Image 1 (cartoon, rainbow, N blue to C red):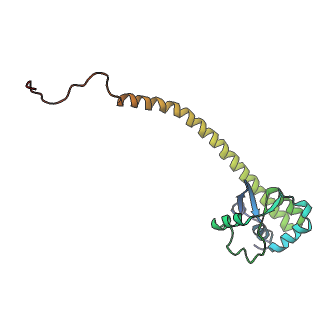
Image 2: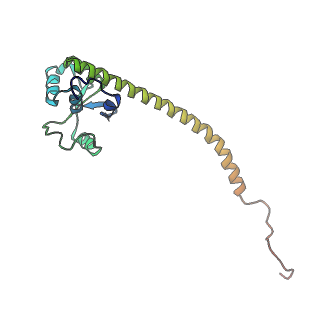
Image 3: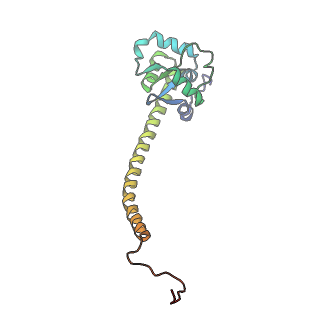
Length: 173
C-alpha cells in the first residue's frame, strides 16, 4: 500500500478484525501494515503514550491465543521474527492510535477502520435480531408440529378392538 493510495476497502479491514476475549480486535502487525509503519514503530509510539492505552484498549495476547490464531491462519507461524507476543487493539484502542500516530495517512486509515468496526457491529446486531425472529418462529411451529406428531402417533397406536386376521380360513380350525 503506498502513501498516495489511502482508499482502503472495508473488506480488507474487516478481514483483519479477529474475535478475542469476546470482542473484535485488530492485531498490532495488521494495524502497522495499514498505517504504513513498521510494527516496532507503532508499538514504540504506544509505549511513549502508555497512559492512553489501558487494558480495555490494548492487551498482549497469551501464548494460547497466539497458538489459536496461528491454527486459524490469522497470524503467521513466525510472527515475522518478533521477540514479544502480539498486541490486540480494541475499537477504542484503534481510535486512540489516531492521536498517537498523527500523520494524514494514520487519520484516513483510522477513519476507515472505525467505519469497519461500526459496520461489523451493525451486522452482528442484525444477526441478533434475525436469531430472535427465528426463535419466535421455531416456538410457533413447534406447537403446530406437535399437533401433527400427536396425530401421527394416534394413527400408529394399536387399535382398541381385536383385528380379524386377513386371508383364507377353513372352518376346521
